[in-house]
Length: 451
Image 1 (cartoon, rainbow, N blue to C red):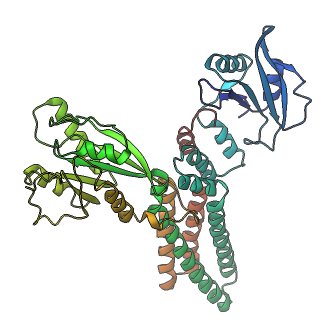
Image 2: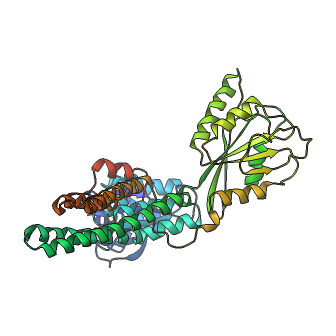
Image 3: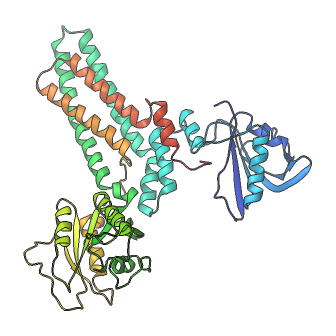
């Protein structure tokens, strides 16, 4: 990390201002070479300086240059931000000039990666930066901000400190085995703290899995035979004509997507191709995609035609949904009833029609009910937000259960010590205290350039 990195930190396109950001030892001197104004190497830290970017005696742009000296910066390195006029040509020209003068184009997420490697933030906080950037709702933003502020980090550090205290007690017990009262105190202390930690960690994991929808939203697949009204239902749910609606069966041949926010949670709707036996190659591919979406979805909306009897294709779909969370929608209720659903024992039944939005609000209420969206509060968001964190937390929980069993089985404390050290290490992995280069490179590659 001895070189200077540079990237455009704002969206590239027309706008009032663009920002070209540099970080690393020598970044101030590098920009100073092409800056016409104050000597940037002599200005105070965290100041904004007016002037021009020049190259080969040509004025490139009128700019404001922010100078921030280490260590009180985002990366803990010297940082310079060039605030130039927005526009693709101007911004790219300034980026090019920085690179011609020795800066290297930053990799995706490299600024945040340097903040992590330089010890300014831990891995949970780094992941929270990405979550904050990608948040689509107020609740997702609140979760990300809490983790960025270090609330989850504080809980994990408390766990690790308690484990260190237990390990210290065990060492005393090992060093002075002749004192039985020390062993009794040590075993009692292990039992109490491990039990409390297990319950608290289990609670956080459960909350995290339940509230994962805050970050990722709910994927809802709308499925059914051709021409039952799937596309009409999608259009009414999202409030726009996203899917083509005709009386011709098989109009939708691929997935059509749309989204809304419901009680602060993003619902990602997917209108799938009608599922039926077909010899049409394109339609057949669409049917295969539909089945894939059923397997991926968090919720299925199964659309049936009120004006037709249940068919073999309907029954096949119902069998596919046997273990899935779904809502059965009987569409076209304004037409004469021919459907025979009495023996099907359909769950969560809703009726809609072809000419109005009747039933759509009821459908939304049913989604709220199925996912308990009314019960998700706006506070207490100390939760794990991704699969990496949850997986490591579950591994810790499993080892905690092993320790609890070992204590109850009167296992020797020096044997229990090994598992306690394993928990301490895995909690450190969540924070990034222990990591592999492959993990770090993969994680930060998901960031956007300039962050």
